[in-house]
Length: 190
Image (cartoon, rainbow, N blue to C red; front, side, top):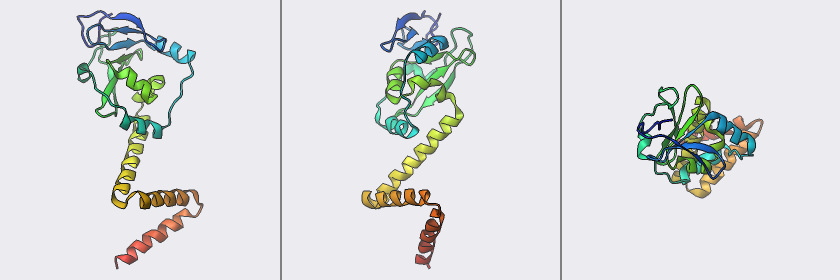
């Protein structure tokens, strides 16, 4: 089987530290992960799946250094068709690739370690879900808004605003409190 990122190289079978059997490219260091072996690995182990909030926090704290090959399109070694790419929003981002037919994965050098740290290794398919990607973007936007609030108001007042927002959201008549606050701001500008 030829490497998706270097067609002149034959992939070599290898076992990762996690006990997962893959086909490594001696040239690029990336590896081909067959769906059947991935699913067997998933069924043999219990894997903690982090919440989206944990994931967003981890995305901002784990340093990455994408492989030079990450920017290149890749062909499936089995079918010769282009692999589908899913972006992982680390800083800088990188891409995991998947075969559209068999669901096999291409992981460039260094990406697996980051996927393990993020908690994404046991849920690679979620990366290719537009619903999950949308939820992740929404949560990232909320986190950016929170940080902007802290930057503008300071930590103490921002914390009070967040606590009030949580209390109003949890209260059955919380919308009345929000309307009152908005009304107070409208009156202040008159």
